[in-house]
Length: 120
Image (cartoon, rainbow, N blue to C red; front, side, top):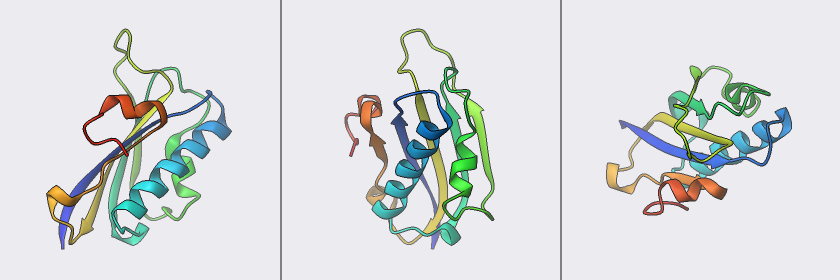
């Protein structure tokens, strides 16, 4: 087993607790499934949100889906003019036997435009 970083991002529909929670759960679930991970294999998760997302903490939604013992932290993304709005980004560190080139990085909804080369 080695430690690997898995990236992901999603654009959500609105600045509401429900939209943030649903977006986080969808994104984290997709990242976990695509890389055959379980919460016990995850070492830590870093969330960033664009400055227009203030209704809820992304980490709170992650705790609801089995990440109670995983260190989670959130931060505000750099407010670059013209950047994609309502976007949550994730960097997940996990123990896995998957080779670095085989990691599936997940970009959902409007966030696919951030990494067209690897978007799912």
